[in-house]
Image 1 (cartoon, rainbow, N blue to C red):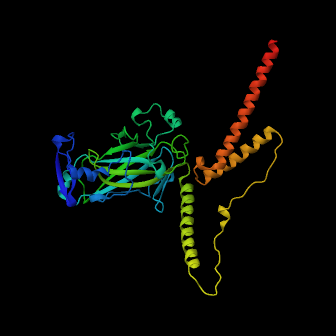
Image 2: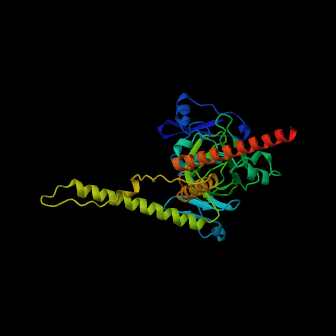
Image 3: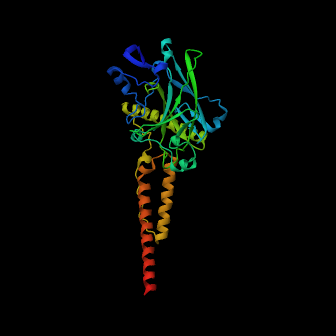
Length: 350
């Protein structure tokens, strides 16, 4: 095992053909440097890191199959249908001819939840999609992200339980200073799967690594797996546009309100009705069945609204309250039915 020192005392391993399976030895300095680059542990880094090789990736927008997937440059996000191929071109640069001796580079793809409150959770396929592919390789059965490369490695960190897929970069002579490697991926669960992604946004973090997992570069991209990629992309781009315009408008209002102009009355530009709390009047309902139907109607309305607006369903207080009331009414009805059946059986026996 050789090492090459580059500027700032960073260490990069170089694997000799005679010692490709040998474990790397690090100095204390290199170990501390690479500690924050660990990619599948409990605490992972999500920031882009081009590294010494300017690691990056590209999506070919002219691809014929793009009707199955769309890429939003505004959001840096891919919208793709389930079980459809996503071709990605990875690129990196070798600035020093001596670094060409590095062998067996690999590209790891790690799906994580975008919201920091869920990032400690591992991402797995839902049981329904697992059952549909029960005849597939058991090594990748629980992985939501598949790689079409025949020798892809499906990895799971035993401590964090994170699933990732590794594409081995096979040795070949680059035709220029930049080296490009194409990898095909598939997403095997939808964002709407309730026992998997559960409508929570995700990132896929791609890392260029050495054979022993040292991260040489990192890039991330947002992903939504859906049935109508174009529709969802346009919708979310419009939401982002309104958000940016709202921030600009808010900053403009603040600057106007903060400036004291003698003799001029300040004007309110914002509409506060969105955040205003309204109370429903008391509404007596005759009969248990009508009461239950009303609760289910309201529950369905608020649930559908939360899904359309991409809100977290569990955090909506009205949905939780209505769900509890529905369960309570159904439980009472079930208990009453059981009681009636018991009384009938007792009467018949006597």
